[in-house]
Image (cartoon, rainbow over all chains, first blue to last red):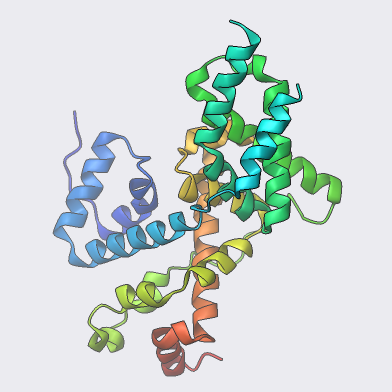
Length: 79
Length: 200
């Protein structure tokens, strides 16, 4: 049976990183979602952490130099 | 399957994720020349051991595992970095808690304002400053979007270790961003907060 009890702020925040990383199973995910919907403070925090994640993800968006592709092709062609 | 087809497929797969491989390598090695070498060495190793790829649908996870193994292997050879997990210090640090203070509410949404002002370079500096064992987890999770289980498989560590390293990395990273903001132009809010608390 699904546990429908509402999480406390402490319980929700303890699961927040896993929630934002999509690492929670549906019952826990739903419980965090429900808490964040109802609690303004935790909603602000979730939004902050989500934005920070987005900013961090941008750091991985670095186009490889064009010479990298030719280096790879050369490397494979040499086999 | 002929060798030519195999090679063509391999090249297509590598080309499709080359920016991801390079982006991750750049944040792991922290400089472009080493990043290019890391990607090239990893692709060469992957090509040499292509028969070990049992499920082509898992190409990305497979080649990223080779990339991270190669990175750690290079680190060990150079002996310039510690691959041990640093001992924990203090409790969890939260940027949000530092910013979401009653006296800052005249700023309306101080946390959003802070994130708007934080520069890409500030985040990059904070990420680059993380110890390797933490940085690799952040790179694989936050930058490349791998799940904890995929990261655990890549690094051959328990999923609980991935979770705890991610948590410590996030705390250290947020602390570094906060500390830097106190001394930079991006830290108007941080500086105001520090001034009120008497932080140096």
